[in-house]
Image (cartoon, rainbow, N blue to C red; front, side, top):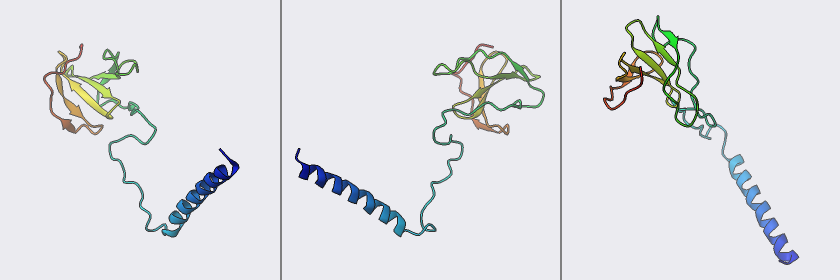
Length: 127
């Protein structure tokens, strides 16, 4: 490639970046749109929701986890309440999964204790 072609490519590249910058500067900051808040989703670059320090329900005690986290992240954090129900932290969605004492799924709950998804009869865990 000759010097003339290299120089032409470099000039075109520089002009393109300047044009892009000028276009950004011409729009007032009040009219520039901010990205919408992503409710219930992870911030960019973060791949999981850390487990909360507080139990999902008052009086629940922390027990050893048995359910493996998909992708090799160890086991799910687990709590048991006074009725024997099992609560597991879903770090992908940032919610709790509730199971009865036999390991049958009873639904998905947010951190406030409100049910967000109904029971799924195909889901079971080792009690």
